[in-house]
Length: 173
Image 1 (cartoon, rainbow, N blue to C red):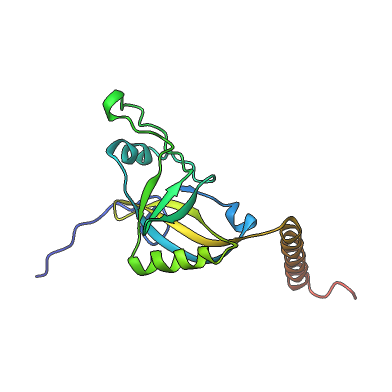
Image 2 (cartoon, one colour; image 1 turned 180 degrees about the vertical axis):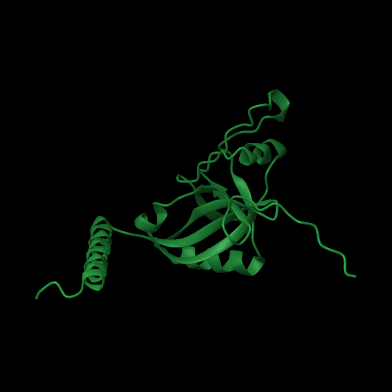
């Protein structure tokens, strides 16, 4: 008879086993996301404990390549509530991101061409490790944002009209 595997408790996250800590939803409105990457993060113990409490703000963040390494700046991880003095960390410090060499070189090359930036999209737990989803993004102008909102509103109205037509039949009779 085969042994039964351990039952694991499901986290309150998405179906792929991740648990969301923070997200930057406005990035999809403010930028055109061309490509996404998943990166690990180098964190201290009090930062990990603070993230376990669900505290982080990534909306002001941006990533850049410096000396062949990927760094993220502008994210805020508040100090762990029980860390005092020696155990506390600087909440706004730069943090190193862990990516493959080929991915770092590709991002460095594409951002050096100009007009592109690297923004954090999500911060989440995956397999007990903190991961960050980065987006290679191109900024949108105000008129592009308005055009995008107008298209979305038109699509929503069209979908609503089609749903009403399918529900009640042809209304023009």
